[in-house]
Length: 299
Image (cartoon, rainbow, N blue to C red):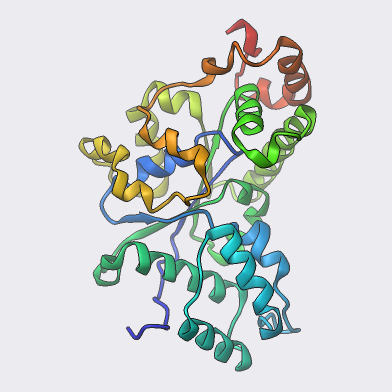
């Protein structure tokens, strides 16, 4: 394959979604311990990049939006196309051959070849795209990849919301009730999509995963259609492989990848007030009841 071209990607891709700080990165790390499964940093493609694309009546991306799009890709993915790659994309666009899906796969190809060069020589493999907020764009994912398997990981809303508020610099000032409403609306979105695509989406709880990892991963493996080698799980803390999925700006993930698998929900018990916990739970009570979550402060 010539540099600047793109690979023909497998279409049975795996997407990991869920409210931020719910265990999406942990699940990603566990799955890439398996041979033939590759991943990369979050693309934010459907929730950010695709929104700023300019397209003609046939859906072809117009080259006039490239400067803005490339800038946003660098901002969100810390990724820059080479001059040759930009030329290739421009030619495709001018020939009306650059659909949004083709552009997305161009990005995925570049990530895979840059981070996992050996993938080009592998006949059969799977790739994982993990962007939590893609939970709101499952319809678009399914339009691109009807064979996709979507793993939705759910965590008790109180530690999820509080972890998001204190770990993400851009959420320090976000009101706790607004973050709770986002947890609630994301779950509602996933539940709605599960009715539309019942065989493509599986929800697992973070708490169940960390309590009985092998049991939960066996179910996940069956859902995504792989044979899971549990003897390889010890590699989930592999710095070299995990480092390919974390951007330098994502400081909140650095501690996570060094930690053993354990339930960290109670770690926030002394830091979040009963009043804030009550606010979160009043907003998210419907989802809590459906997935068997008890009030946080009586655990």
